[in-house]
View 1 (tube, helix red, strand yellow):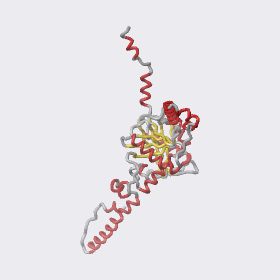
View 2 (tube, rainbow, N blue to C red; view 1 turned 60 degrees about the vertical axis):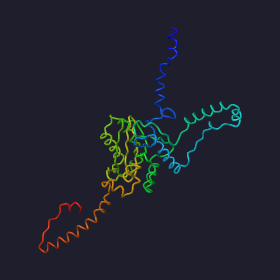
View 3 (tube, helix red, strand yellow; view 1 turned 120 degrees about the vertical axis):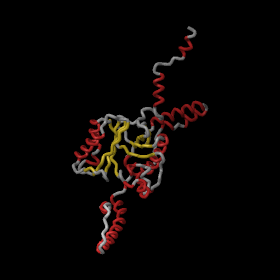
View 4 (spheres, helix red, strand yellow; view 1 turned 45 degrees about the horizontal axis):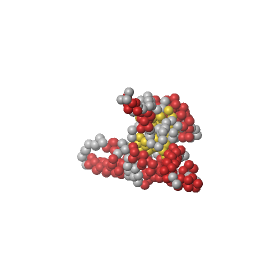
Length: 324
């Protein structure tokens, strides 16, 4: 019996290890911080370094958030000690420290921050929950400023997509939600050209073709004058599915802002042409081809003169492509 007693002392309650595992997996700063239906915010993709991505996101969003909405204000009366309370605690430093730590923990859980990182449910994806702001307006302002100034402000953040609404990632739930969600942009008398971009992560039960077909049908039912434009639409409907959550947004200037890629939007037109010639617009293509057309015209004149003198020369077949 004596040998069994030390072993008995080491026993732990049944739920001890399960609770410890839950605490280990739980994000810092309180429980329940994961992406779920009903949230609004900003979905950010990065390249491997999620921790640094969150830091860059807080810095960038904080800078432009303060600019557009003013500095973030807090009213935590729990943090303020009255004069009498301070006097009582002066004689007991340990009690004062414990009280302060308790207040900090309580205020951290109770504060409704303007930007708060939550678990996205996918690798290399960060979701920043927002409160009291319009995600699409804030992100559009950031990209517009970066596109104008060409000033690079991030290193690991790739794309930054505003998420104006979320619902469960099941077809019936998405259809019901989208009917109301799309109204501000597409319900008559509002109208516009649009495209739908779709991405699913850690989800295998949704069909890309079915989702695009159903959502496009809803947009068309709101106003028959809404038309699909895959080249340069007024609006781009962003559908991002992560596990069982569908994130939706309707954004402007998707093509102009390089698919809302913060690394690409700061590049000059010359750099972009060198790295991706296919990104040229029709107008830019005509400008590039124009000097060749003039040279071709002069070449034709020379050939015509030679022909008049009894000389003949075969026309290159590629000339027809250049003149189109």
